[in-house]
Every structure is written in structure tokens, then in C-alpha cells.
Length: 218
Image (cartoon, rainbow, N blue to C red; front, side, top):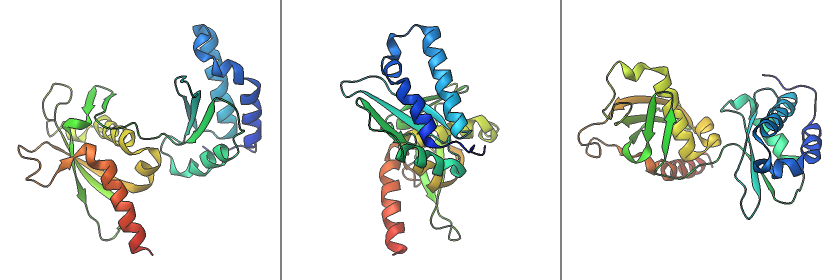
């Protein structure tokens, strides 16, 4: 997981040399497209093992290349270093970290299907760690359309799937740096009376939390 002695310029030199093919990725046949994607991952891993990328769909404005640390905070600085040194190329935008994808999301992970519009959360405060957010997330409508059984709540895949869903709502950077811990529970019959909020409200809550934290820290 440690970066090599290669520099960002080496990755970007490869990118520039392959810019035209990457821009027209959808026009390549499947073997050529997969080969190019594999080569790009090899170049990225040569810069820093553990980083991944996503190429956005082509639009009238071009394409987006997102560089991700897969939530590994130790690699965040290499994501920033790489994108800070990105060249200025027409039709490309280079973005550090996976960005929020909006609200009312549907996320499939392993055998679970998450719908943010049907989930809820409450903050779990910890006076010893006031700068991070703890969450209790209430889950209905999973694999079989019912709330999870108590034994399912200990399923690591279920917890990872919730983290993936949270990241899709608030983005990789905030998810990694702010969400300190998550616990799961079945959806109460009256969640809002129990102190829960819709999970789709989490982005606004995170922004409010950051503002309050920044004021407190001067």
C-alpha cells in the first residue's frame, strides 16, 4: 500500500499519450477498452498502490476522471498530489475522491439492496471524539423486503454496504474523515418519534456538523 518512487508526472505522461483513446473509450471494442482500462490501472498503481479510478460517461462538457483512495485515509495525500499535478486537457475534468451522487439513491451491495429514501439515521454523540460523527442507521427493506433480523445486523457485508451507501450520499472524503462509527438497527415503527431523520437528510446534517465544528475550533 506504499507509493513507489514514481512521480505524478509519469502517470500523466501516460494519460496524455493515451488521451484520444480514453476520450473515445466507448468507441473501442470490448477487448481494446478493457485492455486500456487495465493499462491505466497499472499506471495508477505504479504511482501509488491502492488508488483506483472511475471514468465518467461522455457528455457535452467531456469526461470526468475521478481518483479514489477507496476510503483509505493514509492514501488521501497521494490522491491530492496526483490531481493537483493534473495537466490542463480539453474535455477532461480531474476530480479527487468519489463525489456525492445525490439523493434517493438505490445501492446494490452483495445480497443487499439499499434505498436511501427508506432508511433513517440518528447521531450518536461521543464527548471524547467531538470532531467525528457516529451514526445509528435504521434499515428496512433489505434482501427480502423486511427489516433485518438481529443476526443479520452482525453481517460484515451489511455494514460495508451501509458505508458504501453513506459514501454515495456524502462523498468519499467526508465519509472517511467524518464518519467515525456506524451501528445498525431495524427500522422502528415510528422512526421520527424515536429521534431518527431520513437518511437523505445526511448531506445537510454533515454540512451543519462541519460548520459547528469549525466554529467551536475557532
